[in-house]
Amino acid sequence: MATKTKAQKPVKLHVKTGDTVKVIAGDERGKTGVIKSVNRTTQRVIVDGLNLVTKHNKPSAKNPQGGITKIEAGIHVSNVKAVDSTNA
Image (cartoon, rainbow, N blue to C red):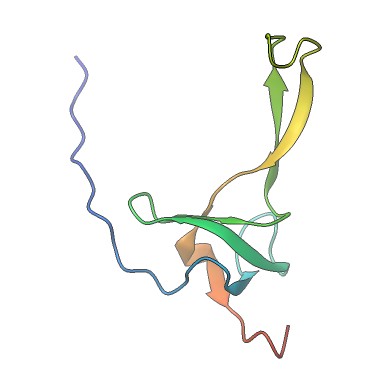
């Protein structure tokens, strides 16, 4: 039997959209980038050009060829550190 999960409330985070951050953990450790979007309920950020994952697309009316694309995946907010833009 499936269990219900509690609905998470949005949390205040130490970073926001447009901030320059440095990844401090994971495969992208040591790289810096600018935050494209922030999800406060799941506590994840999407950093421009980092944490790329491969997505396979089925052919559709919009994209008749289908194919493989690379998109940015979320990084947990605890794995990024805000960086002063003058030092980046």
